[in-house]
Length: 542
Image (tube, rainbow, N blue to C red):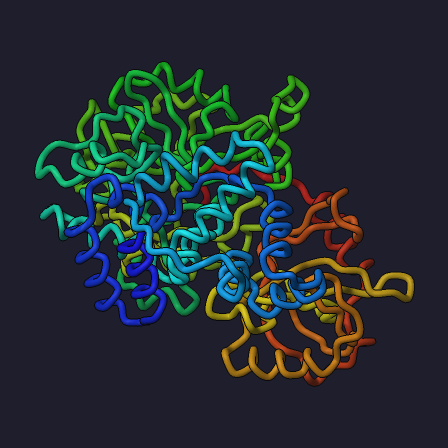
């Protein structure tokens, strides 16, 4: 644990990419394989579910510190991270400063994971003992593991680069090896470092290739015929893996096979050793349905016949990554696409081929892009025809050329503390529009402001708080912000009756007064217009 806590501190105190990679390489070279496996697990964004209810830890903190409830709440509001708050409070209690140094693997398997099945009193007694056995710096990491709030300022890409360097293999190979579900064990980590042998996991997907946004003129990309244009689908990015069985993986490396039985049934007819990349869409009668329809299937514990009928799904495929058990990602896109087209002929739902959007020149393509919303798509994808399928987000060969977002003028009504290095600042905001003379919240956003604007707004918020709800602060409703969003749908979960997709701050409208903000009726009209609009088939354009 001590070595892992030292790594956490090293990563947290620097912004240098090289320094982070050096610290990671040093750790993975020195750590026992079991510890290294758990470190890789957490540093690549994986997590175990919360093992102890927050109330148990809260009670324990009160008992150890003797602080009143309000002081604990204020401390959390100031820090913004519950694990860090507990670590700071316990540092000033009688929890002790022991020097026990067990391996991270031992901590996880013999001490932390068993807490899930322990009785409440046993959980409190165990955590109290653990706090007394580790030094202050290790308590923070311990709390993050127990609460499931483990975050540190390093990307999974850098972590994989470091492990690849230790194993002496290429980073893309290592990225493929760590995809999917795996047990963080010594045997697993040792298998990662093998020069040739890949993981024995027939369900494993490939790292996803992600596009970069293109906001300028597209003619700078060169000749039009060097690029394949497709619709930018608004669904769930997924890989369909057909080996001995069928597995469906989301971009977030979540296994979603059971959510889409019709795709699994259709994929069973594919040759073994096939991996498709595409987008899961709600689709009926040759037309794409709004994303809000697909959402009715996301997160459902049980898929009823009614849900399946109301939101039929297809996989709109646009790439072939594996054929006959061979990795073909290095082939040019045109060849991969030709093989994909042959594989899916005849084309029968629910496995469809993403159509090419034709157009002799960039100007023609730009006009077709303006038709995106009527097709329930977000714009166009531009991909170099001679490019391989890469991993991550390398710039230059895949671009997403999206249409302009919807916008709305709103009033700031609540502020929330941020996380990590911004935990002491108010960086998350709730915005509202007018309805029958009152402000009704419609969105929460945290991106779009510059660092200077965040500091300025934080200072303003602290001077204009009029109510408190835990870490949330209600502020005087006078600041107007223009929000951008991608789509709008009805929602029974929101007081306004609507939900907007991907809200972010476009600009601080200092030139406007709160009464100039938009009304809910404007958004309802937009929703009705979107709902009433004819849904067009996504067939070949041009």
